Length: 317
Image 1 (cartoon, rainbow, N blue to C red):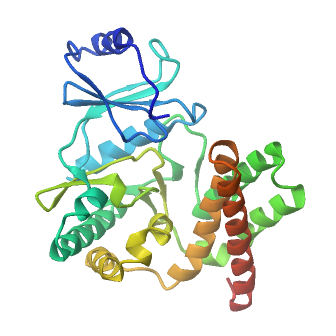
Image 2 (image 1 turned 30 degrees about the vertical axis):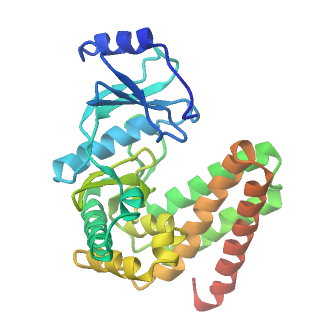
């Protein structure tokens, strides 16, 4: 997707529609693995939802960015959210370009002390994000119907949606699909205590954070943001190097997070459910876009997470 190019006259017409002025320079970003990303005049970032056209990803993102901006969290300004399909047949988001490079790239040349500071501060920022409250659970987009009165209901309905996509593709059978859904129906005692929805980034890791001069300058890529259990965000970190190969950064991250928020007593068991939720989502994505080896890997992982959950039922969860 990131190699996709757009006619400059089309982008200029979009800018004129929203009174953003003349385009003097266009630079295609090496980010945007899913959504093509274009820098305009070294000031604007234009992103286009070309793959998941049925999902209100940028409506979700603009809601999240505005909430975070109001709390002083470093994020881009939102200039335009355009889903009119007038100039391109896609959802479009135009934000400000933020300074810095992503933390993974910065860490290649950073000192150990600088890395630990960035990890600690990223944990603090995640805790601040989780301090933002919402009225309902689920997607943030105002037009979305995926909003619920309980977190468990969001998980149950979300797993139904994910397994239904797999059923249509023929990569799950009905018995397998029901088995995946059932684990969330059964977990009432685990999720009933989550009464308040918090803002959840839903893709929080170092590649989605910018830094400059040792300070975090921006949190990016909020398109998958939801309102839910704050601990849902830790599934995105589970398989990342910061949590597996670099224990000192993991410790710094958790120390930063714990300076503002404490993890629940059920954190570890909930991670099994949240890993399964994400893995079943990626079953259909990998099957359609990432090749057979990737798909088979996620299929095996989904089976493993499911078996771990079922094995844990003897403990009451």
